[in-house]
Length: 120
Image (cartoon, rainbow, N blue to C red):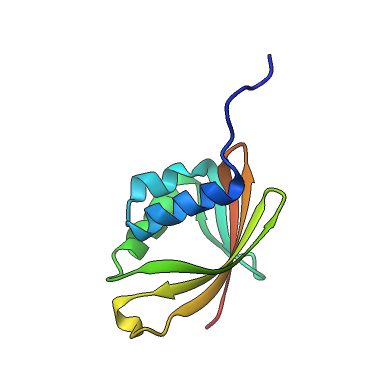
């Protein structure tokens, strides 16, 4: 029997995930990721979080940063990939955000992998 479950477009999924991130809503944020999702640094491949337990540990720490929020500066859509240039703000950033590029791979309506490319 074919799967008739409606699929949210990859970019809309990432927008919703970003909304949960900016709201520091850990449960909602993690719900956008596959149970075995991997978040890693690019190009080193260093794994920053693996699976729901790893996501929760990493983002519990991140969400504790005062004023943490992200804005999308640019976006590229390519099939099931969403590539975002992100501006990352905190209370300590004094209006000078850090920049990062995130590459999200969306499979079956969830984020399966995310690669983070960041400046120093």
